[in-house]
Image (cartoon, rainbow, N blue to C red; front, side, top):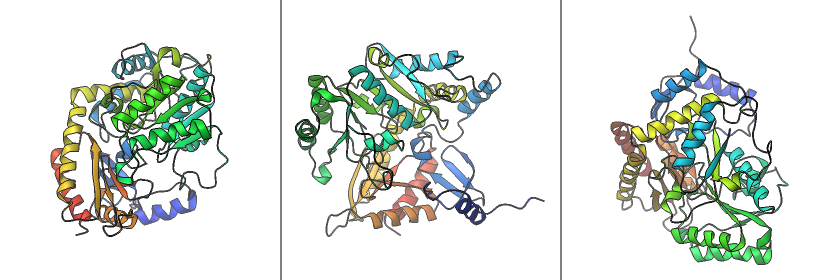
Length: 426
């Protein structure tokens, strides 16, 4: 008879076998999951509002994704696309070129992680422009590789002890009315870099998240995006939209850049692109994407056949189940629910969101300062009652909501009840 392993036993083994640098939020271990629900090895059930950090917009183990991967497994699992190519890679690139913003020739290259996509977007921008410099923003998160960390606008925990970082990377503030940073302030700060840090003709790209993820779910105002586009056009700089977290239906559009009346030159995507399989992409104007020489882009696992099969199924599911519209509806419902709590919870400083990319920010009602302690208490209360939530923000005082867009209405309602009690600390 097999003895059931416990969470405590696994936790002790984890602490002995893996490094502390891999931070782990939960002290329980997943056994199985379906759609928006997860069970640990001891049988406890959780509603998953983390979704693998925005990876599971189509939910855990969507049947169509599983079927697509099984079918691919019967054919082959790996050839290395750069050695022996396969049609599914080409088909996925064609479909992404068709659904991304912009009515002009586009091309797409595939990689394995969001950080890889960002690294390669910078490589492509530098190859196209012949320039080294990159401008990013405070609070932005672009990955844990050396260039990813250089671009990321948050020191702890991502940069602690890891420098020096690649040079010619500069940061400007990201607009946030709540924190007193206007669009004009942010745009003037970008222009100020040309006076104090790097001349404009040495800048290859400006990279930003249209809605910051780790930074706190702040959405770029429309006039800020227009201003950045104007700066880029004036100086021959490329505009890169990092849609790793905001893409694939999370904001009520397939991509967050569809909310704006300007277009990026390059876009990065990952996370929900393949519904849980490791796949990322860089998409952009064809002439820019063709700048690197043959062999300059790629990777052993880049465009893995199983991940590509899953990604093709994700696009089908998004369309067939109308998940973009469903996400927008669920996001509106969540925002209304949170706003109703404001009168009873003075610690709620702001409720904000675009589509299903919703956040609530907490502050001390007496001082107005960010309240990370209250935020942690809300998160822990929810976890104790079976709801997984993630925090974010430069001050750790924001809770972000990343529920699968496929979540059943009854499960969503159950989660909202747990959430209300947690925010009230009831």
